[in-house]
Each structure stands twice: as C-alpha cells, then as structure tokens.
Amino acid sequence: MVDAPSAVESTTRPEWSRLVEAVQESGQYATTKEAERITRIVLSALGGHVIGDERVELARRLPEEAARLIASQIPVTRPLTAPEFVDAVATRIEGATPATARWDVSAVLSTLPALVGDDLTTRLLRQLPSGYALLFGKAELAPAV
Image (cartoon, rainbow, N blue to C red; front, side, top):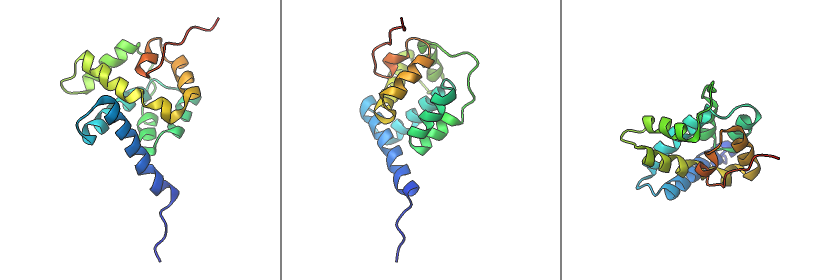
C-alpha cells in the first residue's frame, strides 16, 4: 500500500507553481523559468521591507518557498520609496531598466493580494512608504483623517 502524500508535500509545490504561473501571466513572461526568477528576486527585495506581525502573516499566507524568501531577509534600516525599490530591483536583474524593473515588480506584487487577502495587503501598504499601492495593483491609500 502506498501512503498518501502529506499535506505539506501535496500543497507546497502546487502553491508555488500557481504563484509563478500567476506572475508569468501577469508579466507575460515567455517561460516559467523567467517568471520564477523574477518572482524570487522581487520577493527577496520585498522581504527586507516588511516587518513585524505583517511580515509573519505574509510568510504564513504565501507558499513555503515564497515565505522563505520573505523571512530570510534582514529588515532594512530605512524603507525605500517605491521608485527606489524599483531601482534596487533593477540592479538585481541583468539588463533591466527602470521601466522593465517596474514591470517585473508589478507583475509579482500585483499577484499577492489574491493570495494573501485585501486586509493583509492594506496593512502591508500602510507599513510601506507612499507609492507602493500601484505596484500591488491597488489604488493609493488615502491618509487616515
């Protein structure tokens, strides 16, 4: 008799695959390999900018491989503005320009709300400097009155 795969074995790979497929579709990448590479780069960059409970919750709601990318980053001492974040990602992608890096960042970050939920996305955006909402495919949040 063959044992059924554990929940971790049966859900980890498909979840990561679904995330990469969503990024591939969003970014219109020709191959899964390219979408996976971009996903890893962008999530690694994001990992240092998300802190506290939101970081823990984000890692908990993402596929295991994505969670490791987020959790393995040392928190930054100064959060980058959205344009600085895009520029920082551009330095990690060979041949990238600010325009292509913005495309790549948006292709990845805009897939996250469907995975992690609007509540957590809103909390993440409140933690990040102004300008990130558009990268997540959301309207910019208005300051609380």
